[in-house]
Length: 86
Image: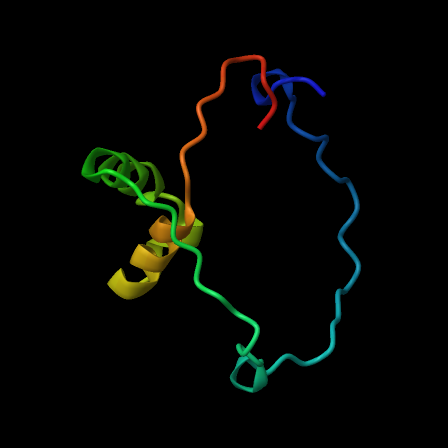
């Protein structure tokens, strides 16, 4: 599989997308009993670099401080060289 920098944008669809439907989901009824919090130890420098890297990503922008800390705790650093695939 080629490196991310080798990918081209997918072609634009010419037709309108058909309707999409799914079953109802109630997050309050979701069972969290099987959840165990994952924490990977990090230095202050690693935590700052991770925070700087994700602060402008849409998925992470709406998290509150506690949620952000939980996400950062679960992340770990992996150094790669191009053309490694991530």
